[in-house]
Image 1: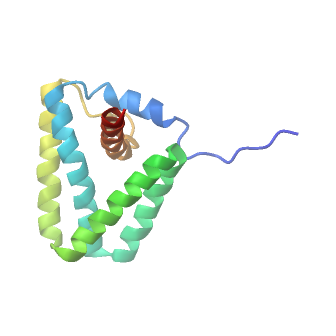
Image 2: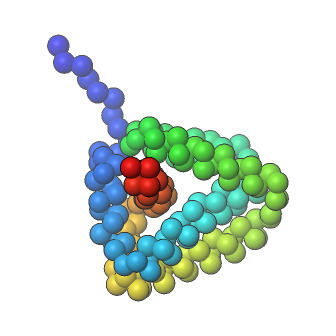
Length: 151
């Protein structure tokens, strides 16, 4: 008897996602812009969401974490910690929807400038799931850098 596997939200492995994402993120300037803009966009989305509906934002965050969980336990934990830090900062520094929206727009402008420099279109034009892979790419690069320093 063979055991049936539960369906995964994504058919690609984390490594496959990151490899595909890296194709349009080779230029050092574009990478640096993304390392700043991707977490900023993520935080601003949480901020806008929390300004509108706390419960909806927490449910949506849980679904995003489920996506990360099926890719990697360490990614799930890292993103969970990042979300908790974001929510803590929001509790300490309550900023309204308009400020979060402005931060969101500025960060996206940065992303598109980075892609103009790179000369390649953003990955999410091919697959919207890449919008969730951007934060995973930043976290993975931070974890990889940490591993290199401890080795």
